[in-house]
Length: 514
Image (cartoon, rainbow, N blue to C red):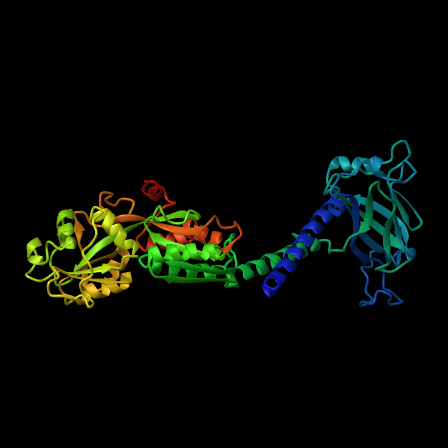
């Protein structure tokens, strides 16, 4: 809950709420204001046309136009241009006016002034003018006192007409209002504009709505761009997990563990690789002790069939392994038969397989190594390697031993030792072998090691990498989440980057199904 209540999240939620309110307001404004029937009116001109203003009521320079200087009752005359328009969302019919008098619709009232004459001008269409003429002595535009009576004029959306009104008895700027009503609508004053001014492109409401929505979008976009933390995968889980087993696959698992922990906060994944067989045994012991759900064992190849029955396998990738020799040995290719002769101890000098006159030193893995077991099954035809005869991989423990052979605990140790001993040969995972200095990789029967989709499937030293769990992990557990990340999520790309072929790819599926 505390993680959710971050500043970014609060700002994002508030911005989204503002955007939602604005959107709802737009809909409301459109349905309840813009789409209702509405007649608006505004004074576009109110100017004096009489003689001098003796009282100075206009507040100007006290000079009028003087059009009626010869008419004593017109010395205070004013001229008003009034625009009446349908600025709503619907057309207005003559039946929409609510005045009980069938010949009247609206009343224009001038406070403090007397209407002396009125003319209708600038109607949108010629047919609109017909509604202002009296019929049979009834209707039309009439005035009495300070009031003009307007007939029932139908107005389509956007239509308007103007009244040019001559008044006396008052001063410029006197109040002007229109009374009357329309069914399901309103009659309201609009903001006055000069007669020659163009109407604004957008209304005030439209401008404010545009500004608010722009601010909302900008804030949300800024949060998305600026925030550094990417959203975690959907199946993230928290807790602790130990990954044990294969040292050959350990570099892959260490990198995937780092990426998972970075993507999924609250998770702790420890990689403690020793060997495939030992990792499987440790998993079984952990399961029997009741905490096997927090352990994953990686194995180069399948576990022995006689192992614990509660272990569940997950096929992860096809891994390629390689024979490596010290860089001082120019041999680049060996047949399977030559390799078997070397590792049974019947060939002990490189000159017997096309190399220099130098003793062969066998650098092997210990008996718990999955890589060693793959080498025995895939290359040696099931035969075992000769016994352990050297502690330092250089000298024999006993002079009578036929060959120098040492055993080391990890892939890294094997590659390091082969790189230091001039006549050494060993085996390791392909990616690690390629990255190791002072060694080169041997082809087998003329075929180079590869796990790519277009690689030579006849290369013998390949095997499937397995991830074992004790029973089926709970769906919401860290173990299940990590395996999904490894097989189907971002971990799949990491596996491929290390030179392995993920099982859950089209090419890998066929290879892993064998």
